[in-house]
Each structure stands twice: as structure tokens, then as C-alpha cells.
Length: 192
Image (cartoon, rainbow, N blue to C red):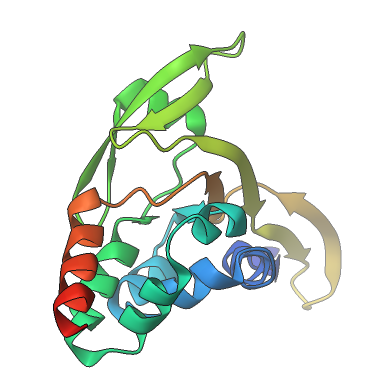
């Protein structure tokens, strides 16, 4: 009797992570400061969403502050918390973010608002702290279904849908609460 199996030709997660590490290296480094959130993202069954601050937007923050915090044991929990606000353990398009008005992250919920509508039902999404999505990139698993006859010979092979979807939304700043930056400023101001 014929049998069929589905094989993944390429992984959306691997493609998204590769894209992230080359296009947003500073944010990817920050993300690696929270192994728990990174593992949740990597092991998600349906895919994930990341809010990746552009390199230009990261440069607007005191670079030495972020770097110092990443290399300070006392500040690791704050950095991990900051990173956790940038991950959603499910794929969320701009349209879904606009429809639901909230993104649930391991760090907490982020309120989203559509500030400029377009003809497709989407638009420009802004977070409660004024940060906006600049551009979105979607990565999908490439799956192929193989059908074999009773003797194990390949009869048919075709591309099929399904699999994970991983979305990277480039944002023009950090979406985490401003209070986390305040903790960093305060700590390093007192440390002198």
C-alpha cells in the first residue's frame, strides 16, 4: 500500500536566526543574554515573532551602557528581561498585531495600536512606548511530501504547506518598558 511522509527541506527557524545574526548582530547578542526565552522561541511548534531593533536605533542608545550591562553579572537579570519583551512564541503578522492590539511576550504584554491604516487591513503598528514596526520579514519551512509505493519506490513528490512560520519585525527602538533602561542608568550612575 502507498505511504507518504513529509520532509523539511529548510527550516524557517534556522533561516530567521541566520538573518537575525547577520542583519541585527547587536540585537541578536542581546537576545542571547536570555537563553530561556531563546530556547522557548527555538522550540515553538508553530514558529515565533521577534521585534528586532535596527542597528541604527540601537546606536541611538548609549552603546557603552548596553555593553556594560551585558558584561555585568548584577545586570544580567535586567538584560534578560529586556530581551524577553522582544519575543512572541507564535507567528504574529502586522495584521494580527493590529487586530488583537496586544503581543504576549515572556516579559509581559505589549499593547499595540494601528496608527496608519493601509488598504490590506494592516498599517503601521506602534507600541505603547512609541516604537514602530519599520519592516517585516517572514520565513517559512519548505516542506515536501513524498509518496512511495508498496515497494518503497518514490512515486510522487510535491511541495506542501504547513510547518513553522517565523517573523522578524524590524522596529525603530526597544519595545521593552522604559523603566528597564532606568534601572541600567541608575545602577551605572551609582557605580560611577
